[in-house]
Image (tube, rainbow, N blue to C red):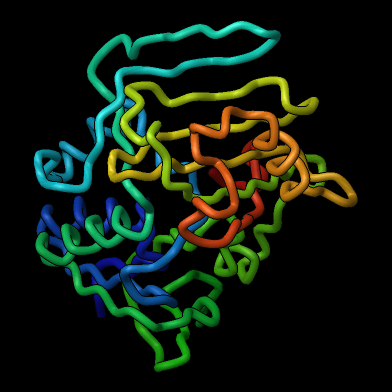
Length: 261
C-alpha cells in the first residue's frame, strides 16, 4: 500500500507529489495522458506563482522562462501599466510547463504513471482507500483528487458542481509576433460584458492571445476573438497566416463551484 495516491499530474498534482515525496512519503501519481501535452491556458504566472516554483526547486534560469514586470490594463480608451509589487512574473507554454513539474516530482522520488485513467474510487467500507484504473487497482492511506476542474473522481464521490456558480469559457491561439518580448502581460477589459482578452508575450517569437467570457446558452469565443483582433494593427501579427496552430477552447469552472475546497 502506498502512502499517497495523487490523481492528476497537472501543476497542482505534480506540486503536491513533489512536496510529499520530499518529506519521505511513498507517492504514486496517476495521469490519464502523457507528457508533454497541450493545455488551453494563458501561460502567465504571477510573482506568487513564481515563488511557489522556487519552493519546488525549479530552475528558473533555464531556457524557456520569459519574465514580465507587471500587467497592462486596456479599457475605455485608456491604458494603465501596473508593475508587480514584489518580484517578476513569468510565461511558459503549458505543454512545456507541466512537463517540467512532472519531472521535478519524479526527481523528488514520486512514481509517475502516465497513460493511466482513474475510473473510480476504491471504497470497501465507505472510506476512500485507493482507486480503480483501466490498468488495475491501487491502494493508499490517502488519495488526492488533482484531476482538474471537471474532476471525475470528485463526481464519482458525489461532489458535483454547484449549479448556481458561474462557468466561463476561453479560447486561445499562438501568433508569431514582434510583440513576443513585451515586458507586460496585457489585458483588454471591455470586449464584452463579463469578458476580456489577453496578449501575453512568450519571449520565443510568439504571443499567447485569447479571450474569456461567461458561458451563456451559445457562447462564441471564436467570433469574439476574431472581432477583437480584426481592427488591431497589422504589424502586431495577430492574423490567420501568423497563427502557429489552431484556436483551442476550454471551459472554466469558477467561484468554488465544487465543495469541499
